Image 1 (tube, rainbow, N blue to C red):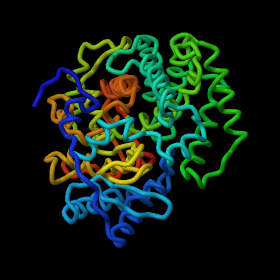
Image 2 (cartoon, rainbow, N blue to C red):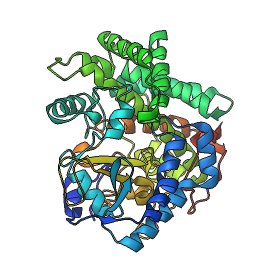
Image 3 (cartoon, rainbow, N blue to C red):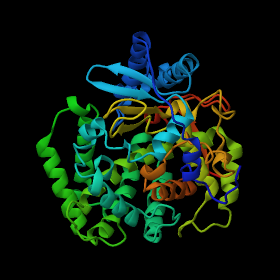
Image 4 (cartoon, rainbow, N blue to C red):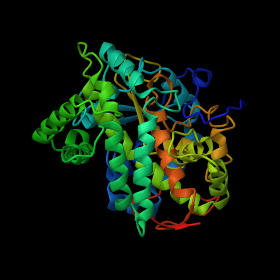
Length: 452
């Protein structure tokens, strides 16, 4: 086991390659295929793949749908072994991952033979980011990925634009602390102000219209092929994206995109919709981390110790706080379905087979992880998480999220402002240390922050 000074958000290339195992898929019975469809796939669709539905999330928490799905995965692994489980569903071929080795194989083999640009993603994400890197292939994927990395700076804890972002975060944190109570709507309103300033460089009427249109298109994208097309909404959204990026407002990611030469097939402005989309998940993670800290005063005390004599008006690395954010994503992944699609025939199946990784199972594997159901931020600092190919809060391998360090900066800095001088009282979900629920409805959480 290795020891690192700061948290590592993705498994290393060496860990993924070491986990790679050859082997063929095994066929699931019709009965087990139906169980997977109803217990795993259906709840994901109902709660919302691209934009969570509040009522559905409340029901999912009540019935702990992720716990049932994870238990089914454990049963299937005992019955079929560690090889991928092949499901024969109408119109598609799916391999279900049952072992960390399968996850490592898929992530190490991205984008070939395991492409992130699956049919399902193209149908869903294409409604608002037709040229996004996640649904691109070949040369276009390569140049768009290069641009994403150049602008987002993965591997750099403090982005070159972190200074102005720190001021934006401080201002919005102050407004959150001034609120009598912090429910989801109050938090989300101010979170999106941060997002618009970081990505677009402003919070004007047009900026707000842009993110409102995105919300509508994400709801349509929840149903992928079956969802409404909303052509006019998409046209207006993409027009606004291009216009706001062209403004080149200082201190924004949009300005960095606008400075990039628009090579054939690149579409710099077309990369921004995915960043906006991803920031919604980051807000959910931040809110859930608050709930965790409220339920674990010893971890809150450790973060406050980290924040002693720290100037939060300037960018800070905050490794303990970042580790708490990463642990929140482990406990409740915002991307429950990690998908890849084969390019060419593989040992696991024919061309265009979808490989499905249900991340809540691997993040909460009670047989392999002694800390499965407890809040254990230390795993992100002492190497335990980094050495596990199936702990993937930001995916992994060549397809890992290039914006991970931007997200960790924004979330950790905001949390630092909220908890340094305030105690947290939470309601909306009972979080029992050591027995944390597998499904947590962020919309039902509510906090009161009291000055210490």
